[in-house]
Structure formats: C-alpha cells, structure tokens
Length: 182
Image 1 (spheres, one colour):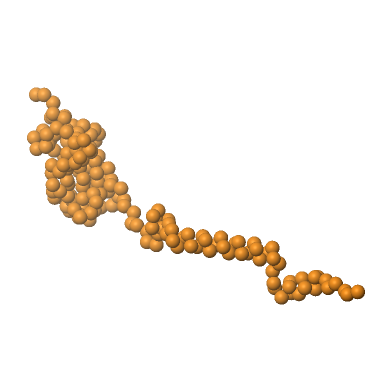
Image 2 (cartoon, rainbow, N blue to C red):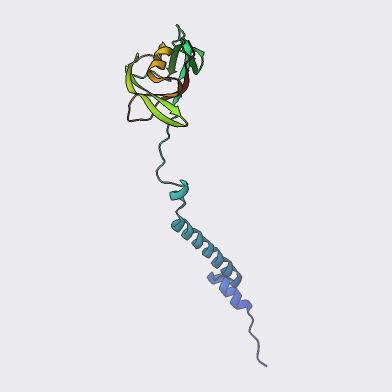
C-alpha cells in the first residue's frame, strides 16, 4: 500500500518561504485593483481643476470693501459721519466718511459714483481725485444734497473709493437722493 503524502509539509514550506495562502492572495489582488482604480480616477478626473480641491496654487483672497458711512453731519472730534442715513432730501447736508485700520500713507483717493437703475450702474462721476490727510485713519467729506441733485438728479447711487483705479475699490456704499417739492 502506498502512503499518501500529507499537505502539512507543503503548507509549512509555503509559510516559511513567504508564499501567501490562496485566500490572502485574492484579498490582496482585490485591494491592489481598488487602489489602481482610485489612482486612475484621480489622474483622469483631475478633481482640482473643477472644484479647486487640492489645487496647486491658491488664489489670492480679496478683502471685501470697507463700508462708507453716510450721514447729515460730521463729528467734529472723530470726523466720522453722524446722524446716519442713506436717504438724502433736498436741503439736507450730505456727509460721508471711511475709517481705515491704518493711515493710508497717501494724500489722494479716487471717488467714483454710479447711478443704479434696475440693477444696471451708469457712471455719473468718473473716478475723481480727492485730497485726504495721509496720517489720518478716517477721512470725510460734506457737501449739499442740492448740489448733488443738480448734477445727477434723484435716484439710487453707489459710491466707490479707490487708492488706485486699476485695483478694486477699498470702500463702497449706496445712497439715495430724493428731490422734494419746493
């Protein structure tokens, strides 16, 4: 009678040589296939090009413009617009101010005004130079509403203030001019 060979020695030899069992090889094969598919999807799909996720170069953050404070007077101590309003009637004084975090270091700003009708802006005052004190953190101006009504008429307006006309405004505000019957 012939003796049947035991598989125990072969199994022990396979474990010693580092060969994996068939079930382990199957699991490892599936894991490798999944990793390969994920890598391929990442390369082909390029998620960073669509959603900005994992993008190589971050885009610069744009600082939102400072608010322009509108009012009918200027505080003599702080130079800030007081008696706050964004609606000016004939005969009212028209005052506005902007407070910066630090002195601007320049003695000029550019002020542009647009009339907004049905969401469409039309420039009524091109960016014009205004003198300011370079060491002050707050600058302010006061005029008569009647002068603005004579130049632009009643309506809704947006004021934009720049240090440089080639850059976005650093201050922004909206106001309304109302002509009242005499």
